[in-house]
Length: 217
Ligand SMILES: [Zn+2]
Image (cartoon, rainbow, N blue to C red; front, side, top):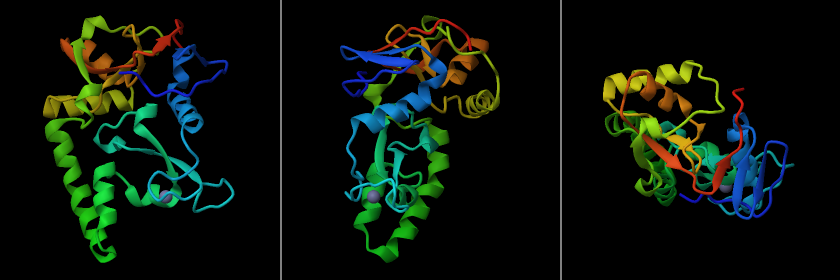
């Protein structure tokens, strides 16, 4: 997929040139996605439309994962929306569609609806794996992707992936890779697939991102 990018960005760990994001330090990937989203999107809450100011607590700018992380939502600009802190905390782990349904209900029915959606969330997640737009996802040979810049630690995230896979034969989220197949984020899925000889992994390939980081850090 072509990830949404602002026109300009330049820092010591990444820059945008002619519509391509060059990443020099993969370890900054998540915070880079937050920075790019703040640069590229408007200063109004996407849900209630109010103008966001940094000085007012209730309308502080926050970032929402539109497909929530609780269902495998990834941290890329296309999945991040700027919104006010009150909408963000009210939305919780609902998808945008579920949240719009929530908002369309009379106030007294909202909490019951949210409870129903959120309590069924886990069983759906486990039975089907992550829920993201199918056009974002490819299944590729594990051997076709490479890790050149992320230390191969098997920490908590690795344990989460391994438990999830052992129990449900699914991955909890896809690996994010650049146009050449270099791992940028969610490397635990890649590591686990490699360790267990799982032939194919789900990826999101960012066609307009080029990783220039060659050092393990
Ligand atoms: Zn809002």
